[in-house]
Structures are given as structure tokens and as C-alpha cells.
Length: 183
Ligand SMILES: Nc1ncnc2c1ncn2[C@@H]1O[C@H](COP(=O)(O)OP(=O)(O)O)[C@@H](O)[C@H]1O
Ligand SMILES: [Mg+2]
Image 1 (tube, rainbow, N blue to C red):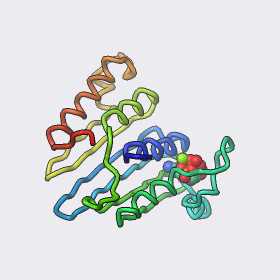
Image 2 (cartoon, rainbow, N blue to C red):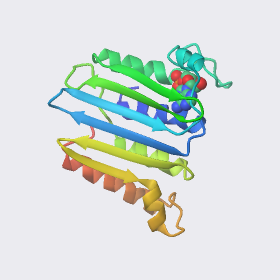
Image 3 (cartoon, protein in one colour):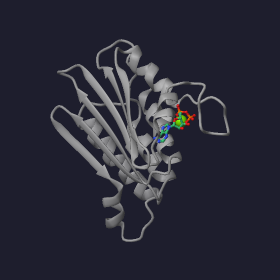
Image 4 (cartoon, helix red, strand yellow):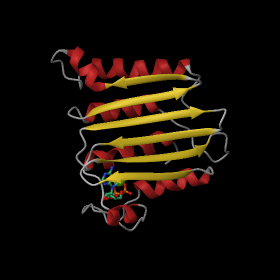
């Protein structure tokens, strides 16, 4: 996977599979600390300690469709390649938070990629899940919460192409204002 937005998509898929109906994606770019942090948290079914222990093992998966589960190992590898790491906090029946950190300016740190597109895909394909997207950069924070948007829509489905476009454009406008061009 050449950019981090694809890893985000993959980790959010785990949250969807775990039955979450609320998924938060948080990105922090702290250039002073030379840190990029990506956090995906959900209110899905969580993992017990044995599942958690195995979650980072590429040859373990609870899926029955494919025998190899790579979402977490690949994100961990991407983080470690840039001197970062991965941390998973989970509680059975409550939810899971996956946090990956990266050394911001590391030569092997993958670019963020098209975050607006990733959010648009997640929101458009999972209308019953509420997504929160939060991005912090240079002391400013942007938040998009589809549960708020759904209230404003007054019955218009969030999957309506015009609505998805507005969401995508709003995220893009913000990212452009922080200097995040799609790399
Ligand atoms: N957010 C989550 N909530 C509950 N279980 C999870 C979550 N993320 C990962 N898991 C567990 O960890 C396993 C490994 O995840 P992953 O590396 O993405 O591989 P895969 O999704 O292909 O199985 C999953 O099969 C699942 O059992
Ligand atoms: Mg997965």
C-alpha cells in the first residue's frame, strides 16, 4: 500500500466487521514534535486478550474468507519503517482504538494520500455508521461528524452523490488550507 489513507481504509474495515456503528478517524500532524499520529477508534465488539495477542500476527484472522489477515501487521510495518509504532487498546464489548505513530520527516514515512476520498468512500458505503473525522495541524483542528450532517439532511440519504461531494469538498478545502496537497 503506497499511502496511509489506504491503511486507514483497511483498519476502518476491521471496525465495520466488528459491528461498530461509530468510527472515529483522527489524524494529528505535529511538525514541531516531528510526529504524525493516526488513530482509528470504534465502538465495535472489541477483542479479548487472546485475540489482541494474535491481532498483530499475519497468520491469524477470525475471518473465514481468507486465511491471512494483514491489515494490522501492514500498518505496524509502515509505522516501524518510519521509526514509529502501533498501539492497540481494546475492550471486549466496548470497542477498539488502533493508534499508529510515524516520524513525520522520515524518508520512509508514507504520504497521507487522498484522505478526503477515503472518508468519502467510507461514508458512502456505510450509511448506517457514523463517522467522525478529526484532523489537527499547526494548532488548528477540523472535525466532521456525519451524525451532525445526517440531522441537517432532514431525511435526504447521506449516500446521495451531491451530499458525498459536499463532504469530500469540505475535507479537501480544509486539507488544502493546511498545506496538505495530495502527495
Ligand atoms: N477494530 C477491531 N475490533 C475487533 N476486532 C478486531 C479489530 N481490528 C482487528 N480485529 C481482529 O484482529 C484480526 C486481524 O485483523 P487484520 O490484521 O486487519 O486482519 P483481517 O481483518 O484480514 O482478519 C481480525 O480478524 C479481528 O479478529
Ligand atoms: Mg482487516
